[in-house]
Amino acid sequence: MTKSPARHSRGRHARPPSRLEIRWTRLTASLRESRRRRLAAATTALAVAAALTGAAALTLTGGSGADPRAAVAARTGAASPAPQETVAAAGDPDEIHDAVPYLETKDPDDKVVKHVTDVRRSGRFVRVYTDLGEEDENSDPALDLCKWTTQFLRDGGDDDPRVFVHGKSNGNGSVVLANKQSDKDDCEVGETR
Image 1 (cartoon, rainbow, N blue to C red):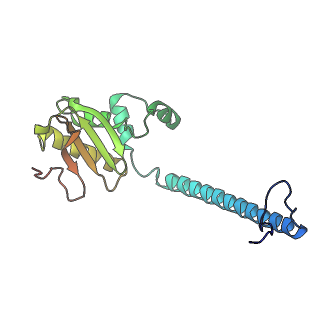
Image 2: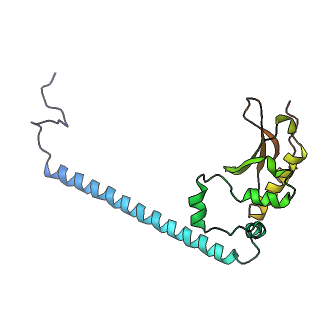
Image 3: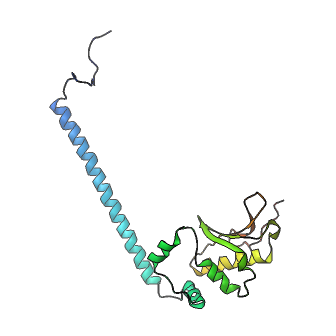
């Protein structure tokens, strides 16, 4: 057993670091800080470039056609809120507030839309929650809601809309009554039993 001190001893009576060790530690710390600053600057530059590109794209495509959501606002008499007001009033970022007024324009007699309880985005999908029961799978109201919501998304610029219409079930969560999972899909749910 040797009595030599540990190579990197610590404590009150430890040998102080040499000048070479101090310089080396300072050099590596400054290099790490320099890399961090360069990374932060590059990230900021990329974010600014992306924002400018997005703004330019919106400016170039903005005047090409009528906004269907503005048409809904015009029909319902509601003024379009400023984007800041929409975000502040939204509360839940996944909730789609302008979907129900759009659906109401498709259903002036309120025979179908009266069943809608909530419309929200869930990743790439839009889910329409209703008070319809499990037995209403592939029913006319469920299929209409699926088709109308698909059209709502297409009018809003979604080229690949995915829609699920949910109903209430007995202790089994929200059962799917109709869905559109691809462009070839016709909103009907296949046999699952």
